[in-house]
Structures are given as structure tokens and as C-alpha cells.
Amino acid sequence: MKKEKPYIITFPKIFDPRGSLSFVEGDRHIPFPISRVYWIYDVPAGEARGSHSHIDNRSVIVATSGSFTIHLSDGKRTESFTLNRPFQGLYVPTGYWRTLDNFSSGSVCMVLASHPYSEDDYIRDYDEFLKSCVGENND
Image 1 (cartoon, rainbow, N blue to C red):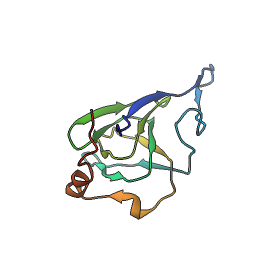
Image 2: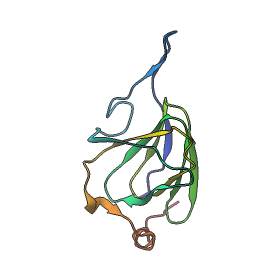
Image 3: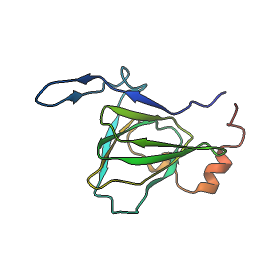
Image 4: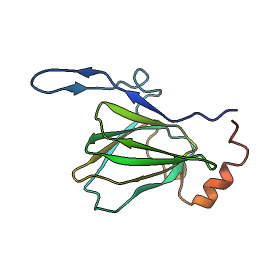
């Protein structure tokens, strides 16, 4: 089975002289129902977040304010995405090691998740992640 690829999603935008508005609906603008929403903020300069993979959870990551970079590894290749537009999100399927860094001052990272929190869904050791990738990377 071929592994799903990450991709940028552009959300609907409503322009208004008083300010713009964007929105998402699960199973419509993103490829899953939303079970959990969380956000990361006040990240000190030079710090990184993430450094894990998920077994079942899929996510869409949005820079609602500021910017940051997401590095995704499938065990063979790493691809980097810089998010800096609140009307775009990065779809992250299962099976990718993620690290977020280069947070600008005042940035807010919002994550829309397909599953409720479960520690059992996380792979937090990179070597264990690489072992889980054996046989998955079909081009």
C-alpha cells in the first residue's frame, strides 16, 4: 500500500474591509472529522516542538499567527514546509516524523487532529520510528 503524502490545504477566505475570515469543516475542507484541536504558542527562540510520529492520528497544522517550519520525514526523505498564512494548513498523514522549529515571535500553531489524545498513538523514539517504516516506503 502506498503511503499518503502531506500537502498544503488552502481554506476558504472571506474578505471584508473590517478583516478577513477563514474557516474549516471536518470531512469537507480537511480529510477527516475533527476530534481534537490544540495550539502551541510562546515558544522560546531556538526551541523545537513535535519530535514524534503518530500511529493512527492524522492532523492539519495551521500557523494562525506568525510563522514556523515543519520538517516531515517518512524514514527515507525529509521535506520541509514553512507555514505563514492563516488560510492554509499542512495535512500530515500517519507515519511521518514531525519536528516544528523556527517559530517567529508571537506565532501560534493550531493543530486539528483526527483522534482524541492517546499516549499509545505516539512514537517518541526516532529509532523506533525508523523500524516502523520498514516496508512502508513504496514509491
